[in-house]
Length: 603
Image (cartoon, rainbow, N blue to C red; front, side, top):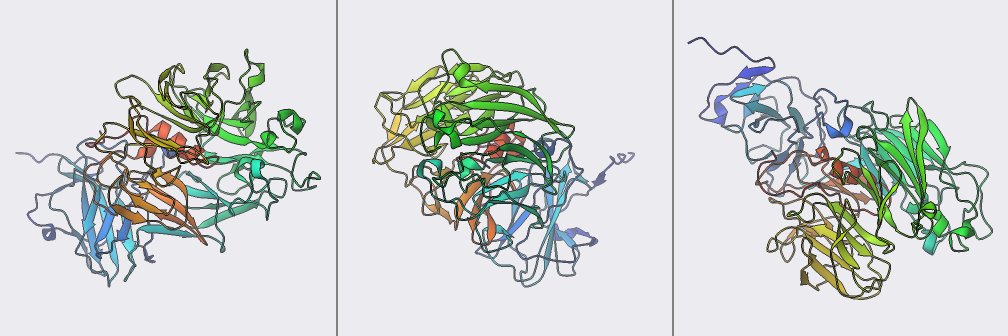
């Protein structure tokens, strides 16, 4: 028989009985081995930015038992039968394959045989139909005596903490970089106190290299509602820009009360690699701040920023003002270095007016399947053309999540918990395309507070669970999200448990106020240090990372529990990707997938 001709980019492999039987010549390796560091080797960069990753995000962490947990991405372009080979070289030894057959069930591996007193280097290669790809893999190294710890750290430039982080590919290499806002916030328009310093925006590469810093000045007060930012590829060039609310550095427009209630306000777009301002337009107007419903500027000082694919292809930028009374939205396209207005919406001009329906964040989702994203402002939804689609009229919700809450029903649903007092329906689930209430609680609510929880935390109940509670009261409710059945009145330890994909299944543990990551009515899985700033699938396989702010560092906690299944990189899901982007401002709503995961193949 004639041998099968080689496929370009592939190499034929012979069957192996033992991993030790195959030894590859040692290739060039990084000269510097960083203890516990992440080295991401990219494939060809993608013009689609975060939607189509260009690397495996390989991470290697030393566990408490001194085994090394390796984890990497399954890419959207990988075929269903793609497996992986894992190689290790210790010291000056050649690379040696560790798995006798391609790894197909998961995209992680526990190496129990590495000599951690010496340097170690791992290589992961995709393999399909017995042929190993020369491209599409990743490599990583650990220095001798690397410490055992469940996180990767990025050192900041000083002993400060940060209040927000945006995750985006700033240079088009397919890797997620970090844009932080520091220090922590000290003020809120509703419970104002003077700023202690000015906010600074800083950018760091995925490998921890510092890129730039810019000061927002004293006219941007030190609180989240005065300083929204987002990072995304706005012009389609494969590199993310930073969009945020800015103001002149001087003069300082301080009111006799001490607040900033006057002066110009801008929507600015900055270059992600340098921080240089690329474009600037006026922010939605403040006018007379007392016209918003109070004499201290609380309601006039509620600002949000967002993005949505209004044309179904590229991101448009959204600048928002107002939550509790008047609501304004300006939509802009950043094209050819300029901001071009697409439309402006004022809820007071609707018939009847759309007022006081805002949330402490924003969601963008394609609710009708036409490829364009609608804009969820809270209890009201705008169409891509800036026209109101529906208005629940129930007031201001604190809890707002969008996903496939009711699997038996086609389309997306929205889970709500309302801060505005309700006689009924304070917790409810509505059809995203129409705003029709599918189920609502029968009891009264005074003030549902904070982000609540929407996640599959209870394996005994099919589907998602929905949790929330009252501010100033001890009332707590845990519902079956799909049908509204009350499951429990127990307190989960906080009004905003942070649930993440972490263990070996789709059931999520959650973090309480004490930094304890544990399963519902189950064991503790990890302890976290620092305040949780973001949740996203940043490194390794489909399980999520938890980013915390610790003095002097950005810390990325990641699981070292062996997986039982595999899924494609979660950021390939547009709803999830949008949720990650919008978590850089407003409340931290853990991102939701279009359809929650179930165990099994990611394909």
